[in-house]
Length: 297
Image 1 (tube, rainbow, N blue to C red):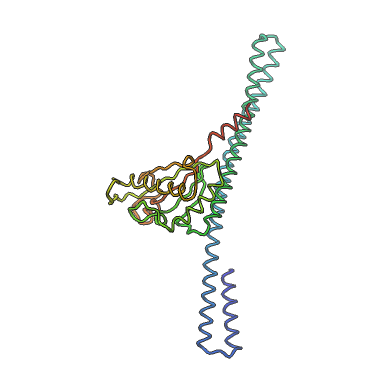
Image 2: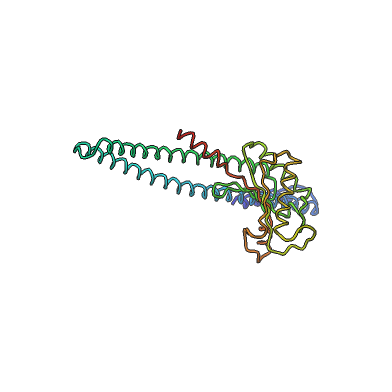
């Protein structure tokens, strides 16, 4: 609807100029072509923004669905805990009133109730830690997308899957076919990614090389796609270290060859999607469990 209005305004403007200005037909056509070009540009920009909006909406819906599922599990555990608390309290009171159990047995039941209370607190702490981790991941993804926003969406993809942040960079941006030498153009993207990661001193990540299933036709020390994927990962790691100053202890280089495809390799598009270098932000499990231990203590 917006595009139709724009087209109408453009046509009306050009027609007015033609009717009330003393311009030649040639100039009119040039002006008309210029206005059409502007309209086409606005149309393309509008379509791009619509696509970006749809992607954001899809990701938001996915995260909302996952959080709803987790909340449902927590609610169910809380119901079970409340049920056990109520039953144990009533049983203890009844037994004490009847003088059927010994003092030691009553103390044992009391300790069981205390353990249930501890588990209840542990569940709340676990829920809080998970929410904290998810918020940190979301902030990191937003920073990365803001830094790499000018790159082609088909060449750089930043996403969260199962609580882990992934940065997928297509090999056509990083390497020539069969090569593990990083291209000059790719260093612009790596510089932007490195700038964000350097501002996260606690973050550790893995650079993972992936290929399609076409047999490697190179030579020298490389034997197959597995070798090529590892060399590509180490090439990226060295640039992040030597050029952009990311500490080597924060990085791991790995190669999966052709064995972790995103799509079937029976089409040109599928093979292109599988030829990628993936940066995986490793979950900080030590910090996660230390947080829980601190709260338990």
